[in-house]
Length: 407
Image (tube, rainbow, N blue to C red; front, side, top):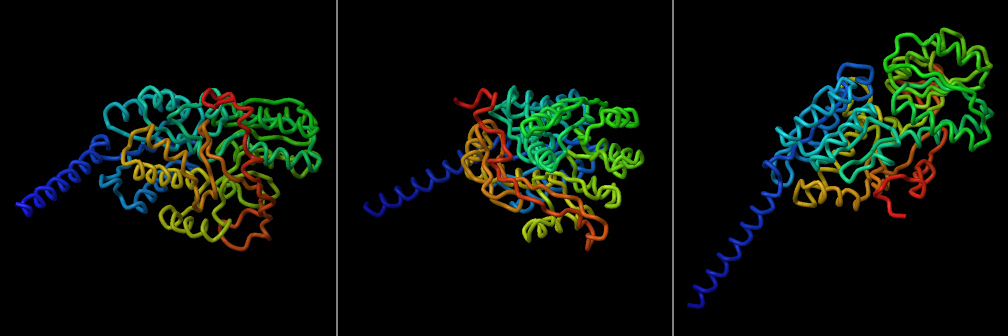
C-alpha cells in the first residue's frame, strides 16, 4: 500500500511538471518567436542597414541556438522603401497575420515613428536600431519600444562639442528635411550655443537629394567656420563629395562636420576625400579584440565591415532573445521588463542599460578619419580621439518629455 502511494505521488509530480512545461510553452504565441527586420533594402540607407541588418539578426538567432524556450525562432524581412506609410502597412500585416513578435532595424526616423504607433496599438515590441531622432524617447516614447544604437543627442554632443571647443564657433547647417535631420540640427545647435558658438543659418534638402550645389553656395555665403551636415548615409556621402568638388576643405576657411557618418560612408568616399572628418559613433569594428572577432565573422558573410546599426541589430536581438528565455514567454510587457532589468554587456556595449524612456544608454566614441598614409590595412579608417561616457553622451532624464518618466 505504501509503495502504491509513493508511485501515485511520483506520477502526480511528473504530471504537474508536464503541465508546467506545457503551460510555459503555451506562453509563446503561435509556438514560434518571430522577428521582423523592416529596413531599407534598395535606397540610400541600404549600405548602413539593409541586407546587412538581416544578416546581423540571423547571426544572433544562430548564435543563440535557433530556439527559445524550446520553440523555433524565425526571421522575416521587408523593404520599407523609406516611406512611413509602407512601413506602417507592412508592420500591421506582420502583426495581424504573421504573428511577428518583435520588429527591428527601422532605419529612417519617419518609418520608426510610424511602426512604433502600430506596435503600441497591437502591444508588440519595436526595437529601433536605424533611426536616431530624440522624439523616439521623448514625446513619442512608448512602453513597447526601445531606441538601442544611437540618437541625435549623443551624435551632437560628441562631434559639435569637440569642433566648437577647437575654435569652430560659427555654424551653418545643411539639413535633411525630415524628423531625423531636424532633430540632429536642433541638438547640435543647442550644443554649439551652450559652448559659446553661434548659428548663422541652415538650408534644408529633400531626402535622397540629387544636387547639393545650391545648399553649399548658401553655406559658403554664410561665412560660417563650420558647415554642419545634418543628414545621413547617401545624402551625407553626396554632400561631402560636392563640398570636395567646391574646394571647401582646401579653402582653409570652412570646415565640414559630419554629424552622422558611418564606416560604409567613409569606405565609399575614400580616405583622400574623407580624411580629417570628426564623427561620433557607438561602435567601430576595429575598437578592440571583441569588436574585431565579431566583425570579421560578419565580413565573411557580407564582404563588408559592419556599421553601428548592423552591430546594434545583433546586440539588441541577442538581448531580446535572452529576455524571452528568462521570462519564459514572448509577452511584450514581461520581455520588456526583463530587458530593462538586465545590463547589456557584449562586444557592442559595456554596462549598457535600457532606461524607462526606452533609451539604451551606453558609451560613444569620437573618431577622426585617418589620412591615407595612416591607414595600415583594409577598413582601417578611424583614429580614436576620445571615449564619451554614457552619462555625458545621454540626454538626462530630468530634461525628458517622455510621459513614462516619473519626475
